[in-house]
Length: 198
Image 1 (cartoon, rainbow, N blue to C red):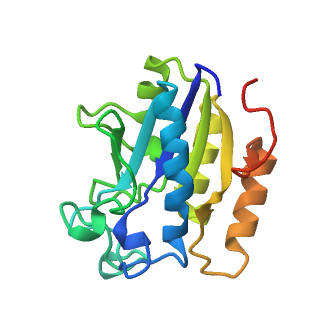
Image 2: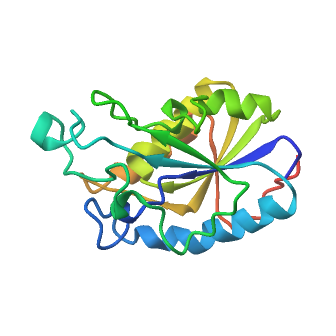
C-alpha cells in the first residue's frame, strides 16, 4: 500500500446479508476479509470510507413506488445498520447514498458524509489516488462504485474475494467483474502476490 491509497467498504449492511430484506447469498463472507483490510489500513494510517444505502421510507427505488427492489436499508432501521461483525473504527468515514425519494444511489460516489460532502471530494481532500474496493453487491453497488471511481480518475483495485453478488441472472457477478476489469480495475484476491506497494 502507499500513502495515496484508501479503502472503500461498500454497503456491508444487515439487509444485504443472510436474513436481510435483500440478502445476498453468502454476503456475510466478505466481513472477515474486509476486517483484515480495515486493520491493515488503520495500522498504516490510511483513510477508510464505508458507504451505506440509506433510503427514505418512500422511494422510487422500491417496488411499491415503481422500482424493482423490495424495501431495504431504510434510514434508522436495523436492516440499514452495518453488519455487527464489521469492525468499524471511529476514524472510518460513513458515506450515505440513495437518500432522496427519486434516487437509486447505486454508486458510493453519489454518497455524502455527515457534512454533505461527496465521496470524490473527500478522497481528493485526502490526496487519494488509488482505491481498494470490497463489499456488496458485486453486480450493483460495487460495480457502480468501481466504474465511477475509474471515471473520476482514480486507480481502482477490486478485492475479488471480498465481494458477493445479487445475481438476478446467474452470471451477473461474473459479467460485472469482467466489465470492471475491462474499464481498468485491477482484480486481486487477499492472498495474491501482486505488488500493492507500487
